[in-house]
Length: 408
Image (tube, rainbow, N blue to C red; front, top):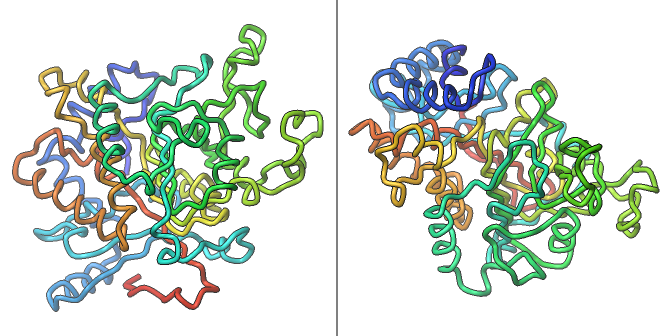
């Protein structure tokens, strides 16, 4: 597990940014084929019980369809289950893998999700690399010029009735200016099938409930439970950034001090699921958006979104290196065509249009795995595509909800 942690792109022990890039994108075990295969064999032997491994081998030999449902302990929250190697195969080659939330989610769920067939023809809302206020403590816009062009081309291919803009409901989806109040209005007034976010997520170590996405919120325009970022004595409120946290999405304004809601009184005393009503499917492509599972009682962005009406939430189990980071670590890469993180985001967006998004994402990951095993090409290194995790929590009160085929 320590070796896995050292292979992930999170700074440790006072590293500089350049040292982190070299450790993970040049020397790391998830970007070197032979090392990665050895690591994932040892991980499989460590985290899969002997009886389960035997059962897997038998079911694979018999050609059975296998679905593995995972609710990991905090220590196993970043294990790339798909990569686990047994004999000559990887787990993803023979099994569909999904995350299950803890059963407590269903006990007092704020909003049950609508059934996908009833909403699948509705449009999607995309928030891609939103504009950040001046004070974001080192956060910066994520997309390169080529990444921006790739997103604009991808989104431009949607029919007009399948996608909506952000600014005033018609503005651009790429690098928009949008805060939590505008998002609440969009989610309340527009029937949607999906929400797709590509941007920054941050969380305090050991406190997944602090996980937050970063929109265009400033301290002067948005009240929230998360502390503003920056030096309040030196930065004007109009530029001091306020993260939009999982705690906001859960609690909303319930219990908020009245003086903090001067510009948002119509939402006073409302729970998060009443303010930010999530559509059936949500994607949060950002650094470790799935930090929920790092707590003994899982809670974070994923659980907050499921509680607010999402059925399927796709995010990442560890921090993602940006396309720019790859280009810095490997200067010889083509900056126009090698866009690993952008490619991942676009693949997730396409999968979330599919009747079975988990199977569709698995198919894309299998393509990446095939290329990786054949070439060890850094452009398809598992440090990016193996980060994906999808949590599925259907409406248990709906007649359409059927228990999936289950292995564990």
